[in-house]
Length: 215
Image 1 (cartoon, rainbow, N blue to C red):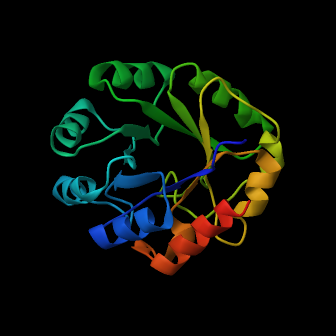
Image 2: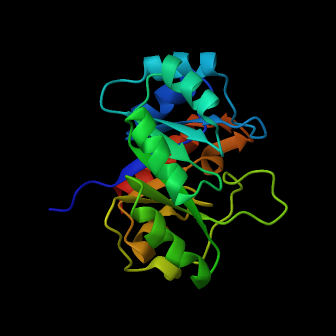
């Protein structure tokens, strides 16, 4: 029997959104530490949300090219299960963060076309998980959460030596197709379950998780 599909709801900004994600069956919840993002939270906000998460739901901190000082502050105050590196971190930096904090590291890798695929193999050697995301437009302020998808056929049937998660433009309406085309067993959504940038919609979260569970 196949393992159940797992959902990550990213960019939570309050306990109400956390509760909606948990009630809908999310396996992971994401907290964004990136000031340019409408989903950015302070360390104090994140601590309150993470402390309210039930045992068994993985708490993920998303950072973008964070230095050790920021990571030290986050890890000191926020109970976390995973660090998600969503910037231009090198494989060496991924390995360094993993060793320094003793937490599993998920590395996001943007995909636009076939030339991006070798980077997935590269980071799969140093990260505990990889997040296969849509590459942002060149002038974009955000490395993710742009509501963009990529051609899912590019990774159809591809596998890596570590668990991987599909992200980028997923919504309640297209996530089943994305899973079918890619074979993903884990999916990540942020803007696709919002009523406005940074505002999670509990009904959309529920619809997304239900669409995944029916796949």
